[in-house]
Structure formats: structure tokens, C-alpha cells
Length: 359
Figure 1 (cartoon, rainbow, N blue to C red):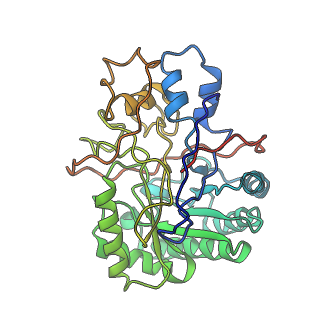
Figure 2: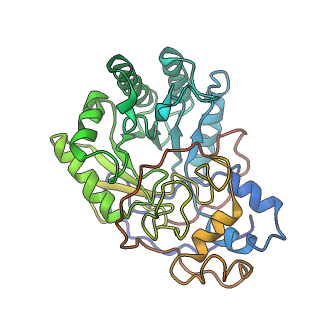
């Protein structure tokens, strides 16, 4: 990746619990980085290189690899600390997530998951980090029997406590689904059962979905209210693909756009950050296999945003000057909840740090 950009001055004020000038970690081993490096002649490459590749996004841990995960996490947190950036790390390995039979790579059972989460936490090393525990795991719980749901709740609480025990500087967030999924009251009940007030620092929403940020803020604030507004619980929201709001399906809908860039300068005391959690261009499972980086999907998110010429009209004009990513659209149509599909798995030691974009 060769694109660089000047970093504008950011006011040293706070919105939520993070300083507003917080910079987030850019993973040099992400799927988009790999594609960007190995496809310099693609017509999509200039736009993706300028608009998606330099933007920090979350690093997902999706494989049950208890012998390797501590070192993988340590590589990332150490590299981020050396840069003065904050990594966003996603645990996504709980058994039977999304009401499916145990997918490849998932922990074999709850006990093994808790051991894996402990090994994950051991790699944090006291560095600042944002840890998102199991997208979809609470929101999709309806299919589980009562005992299974209780075991999942306990495992999520265990993971949150393990992170806090290992790293007092880490902030932990639990799954709130999204504003078009469960009601705020139902999601609050599930979060309470997972001891969000005692085991986490807040909630996250909109992972792998497209809901407008304003909808998510209102929904998440209502979830916190239904929890009784526990002191210290805050919010983070995935804005990676919500620039045009939702489409007519949760699975790789057309006409979507990049959302707001990652930032901790949210202007809302309850909202710690807007983040790119689901990597733009990573498929939901319809246009390409779930989790695979698809350059046409990525380019469409650029071209279909404000200032873009539309996916097809602009398809082979990617070298034109990029415009700023779109802000939230006004669409609010109903859609099915998106599954939090696995994103890039951390697989290698973090190499020499690349400059993170200012957020």
C-alpha cells in the first residue's frame, strides 16, 4: 500500500471514554492490504488503495488455535503500542454462533472457548485495546435452549472478565445486534444475562450491517436505558458500510456506500467510537464466500457513495480523484439482521508499522 495522507489537527477533547484524537491500528496483514499489494494493475486498485486500504479496521480472531493466539495478539498489541495506536480486536469463535452447527474453526465447546479467551487475553500485555466479544452471539440467541443460552451468557461474561483481568487498559464491549433486529428491551435482557455491567465497558452494534448511525445511536442508548443506565457503560458502532443505509437484503446488497471514518471524536458522551469493524469489501456470503475480500464489492462501496458515479458507470474509472467517504444516508427500510461473518484472522507477526490514518 502506497497511499499516504496528511493528518489534520484533531481537538484534544473527549466525547466518550476515549480521547477524541485516538488513532486506531492499521493491520498490515489484512485481506484488503494483501489484495492491494498483489493487484497493482487492477482498475479497482487506485480507488481501493486511496479509500479503503489506508483506513484502520478491526482484526478478527476466528480460529480455535489455543497454542498460537497469545502470540498473535501480542504481535498486534505490541506493534500498535509502538505506533501509539489502539487496535480493535474481535473475538469470534464461540460454539454454534448464528444458530448453526459448529462452524469450522469454532471452539469445540464452551470450556475450550473459555480457555481460548484466556489465552487471547494473555497477549494483550497491558496495552490500550478495544475488544469486541462475539458479534451476533447474544442477538442470535433465540434458537438456543435455555441451558445453552445460559452457557453462552456465562462464556461471554467469562471472556470479558478475562480481558479485564489481563489488561486494565483494554475496553470490552458486548453484542447489541442492531436497530432492525431485536427490540432494545429484549437485547438489554440478553446483555444483562451476560453480566454486561460487571464484565464489560459497553456495547457494540451494527456489525456486518448497514443501519444509519443515527438509528444505531438511538437504539443503543435505549438498550442502555433498559439496562438501567449502568454507570460507565458506553457504545461503539460499526460505520464501515452504512453510508447509504440498508438495502433490500442483509447479504451483500447493492447500492451501499462507505460510512463515516473511524473516530473517537463522536460528540456524544455515551459513544466511545465509530469503527470499521466489518472490513468494506469482505463478502457476507452471497457475492463471494463469507469473509472473502471482493474488490468489486469494495469498489461499489466507493462508487455508490456521494460523489461516486455509480458502480457500473464508474467501474473502470477508479483512477479518478477519490472523494470523501459518504456520511450516513437517510434510508431506514427494514432488513433482516446481518450475520457477523468472519473477517480477516490474524495470521502473522505484525511487520514494520505503516502509518495509520488520522481519525
